[in-house]
Length: 418
Image 1: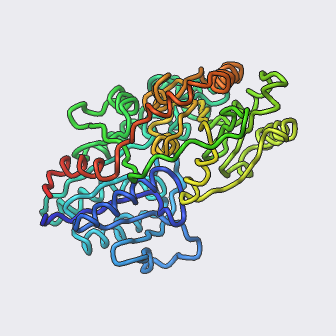
Image 2: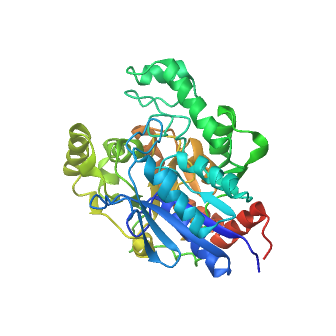
Image 3: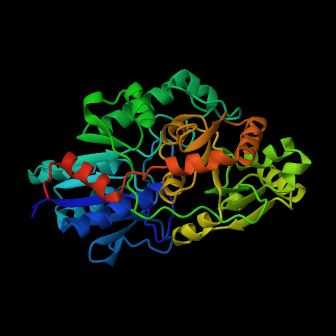
């Protein structure tokens, strides 16, 4: 049995936050413990009634810790609560005594925790391997880590301080240069970086991460049986298209709904759009009005089901023919894609970034140009009219990387033999 003690750090706990990186980190933690490895899970948790410095953390179980802190500086990912970092987090490190610290994110915690982990190792004269998994382009781009220009939705291919200052007129190129230098001074102590897609990895190498210190390991999935194809009634086509995920302008639900404008009456008599997700109430008034207007215009075609739970996915996907991911930003390794493939559902995706990497056009899904409703409508027509296409794509779907396989890759990275 390995003598290593691993601490996995996440931006949230899936009991309270259902994002892809939180779920990926927690599944990894569970698999590590199943293998008998001494593993702890620390998740950021913002609980406004907790202010006492001596009560910064609580335990959901013996090895699952909620760490109460706040991070309001999203430009530099710094916490406003320095005491939480150099005192409370350091006390946790002294208590757990990890030999490997795996950061699955620093959001909501403060990026300084990475440096404090190194300080802990130096102060105690112990070797601690620090690993950082990137889940988006947060260090590269100040616009929510999405590498998309503010105001125009134009994609960025690489970081440039001058271009960044155009997106944020209240800051100059020097601000972005200092931001870059600050981040690089922090992550300089990281031993190895992990990216769940080759596309994301290439962006970070272009930004300056040492190519010798970065690897690609996809987020692993639970191994399940492929769902059978949805049963059709006589004369029915593969006409049920499902959107799963957060509802915001970057995810492109409006692109999908606008595609209905380009379908003829015969298609509109059959096509069904099922929407599972939340977040619309948090969006701007213009975006909310756009979505609500489109839903009203096509009320016979669109059904909004609201928030869903992960355990609901088999039932949702059993009643689905196609999963649609119309994001207008690069994405990385979207959980929706992995889950759809896991359960045997072909996808229609924007032909950019991690989406184009994970879905092969004509093999396990179809591509369309991003932010192009007319092009998406053509793909929807193809999906409905070509009766043999669905069967071919369904048969071609391969099981995505399992959590067991992903964990083994991480263990090899750590140098742990089991």
